[in-house]
Amino acid sequence: MVKQHILPPEIELVLMYATGIFWILTYLVLIYKGFKDKRCGMPFIALCGNITWELLYSFLLPYPTPENIIIRLWLFLDLMILFQFILYSRNDLPKP
Image (tube, rainbow, N blue to C red; front, side, top):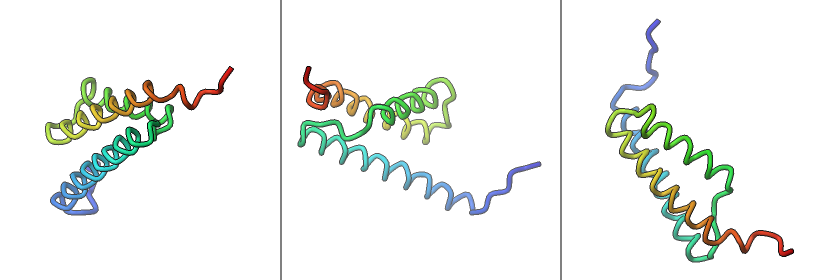
């Protein structure tokens, strides 16, 4: 059985790119706010899940080229957030 699309392919493509762009903007705001507040703005578990998903779908099970570029950009931004986590997470740990 062939999967039927609900929307026309052009609209699906526009929505896919809009989702990618809005997530990129979300990551950029998160990174900006993290450096401004000297804190990591994403929970560590979510960050690990994002990095795992993006590594998997960038290199092991890659999407076609336009989607793969967006996913690799997300991976780069998540690595910047990981850098913030490593840099600022000591402030969140309990003092002995």
